[in-house]
Image (cartoon, rainbow over all chains, first blue to last red; front, side):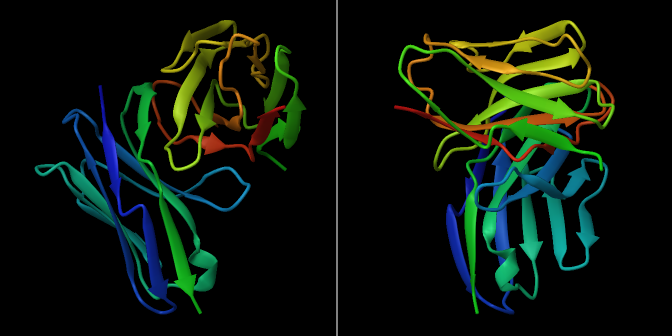
Amino acid sequence: GENVEQHPSTLSVQEGDSAVIKCTYSDSASNYFPWYKQELGKGPQLIIDIRSNVGEKKDQRIAVTLNKTAKHFSLHITETQPEDSAVYFCAASIIWSNNDMRFGAGTRLTVKP
Amino acid sequence: DGGITQSPKYLFRKEGQNVTLSCEQNLNHDAMYWYRQDPGQGLRLIYYSQIVNDFQKGDIAEGYSVSREKKESFPLTVTSAQKNPTAFYLCASSIDGRGTDTQYFGPGTRLTVL
């Protein structure tokens, strides 16, 4: 089955700097890659996702890149703000197979003012 | 105001007792899921349901049970057979179990066994 690894487990940046979180996956059939943000004591919220037919997707300060050949995808946050501090999870799944979504272990991002 | 609600937010249970966690959604989603989250770990799938009156085991179903009698509701029972039940439990839903994969999560229930 699919296995998703996420790095780093913790990340600390200064406000205004960029943050990059990387994930690798094992199943080459995976074709859907969402990223979730989880604030303390709350459920994860989808912030961006990408499907395998594109290599990059942007939404304001957030971008995700996908390298299907290398089987890795990354989350990029530019101009970080203190409210970006949270735990971020990546996931990978095969469309038409919802029961097979696998999550990374999470990255705790701290943005220092 | 559409979304997924979970109750209660915090739950305490004595060893040997069964407890039921509530999950309700008014998004008209067919598929619903239960995940368990432990510190420093990713989400692990307990059970999922793609349609009313049908559900399937996930990776860690032992010690848990579910029902799906209504489209809006997917309660999870943590039984006394679950050896380490203290965790944060997350319910999610998606439009269907086949055509799209975006899962929307509820706020979670933190279960503590005393």
